[in-house]
Picture (cartoon, rainbow, N blue to C red):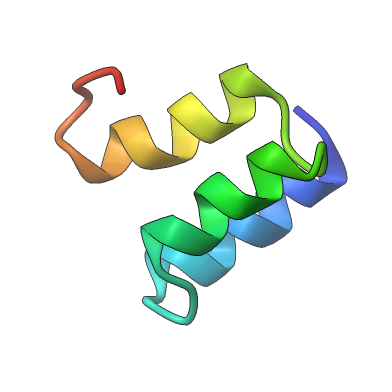
Length: 49
């Protein structure tokens, strides 16, 4: 996982960034699909997006 993944996960876990921002980061190429799924999947109880 990239350094960006850890930053975005930290912000998302602490509710400083919404899921829409995670998706936007993926669309802009900041996060990979695997990183996006790991962040958002953990928020849904391990369910994959």
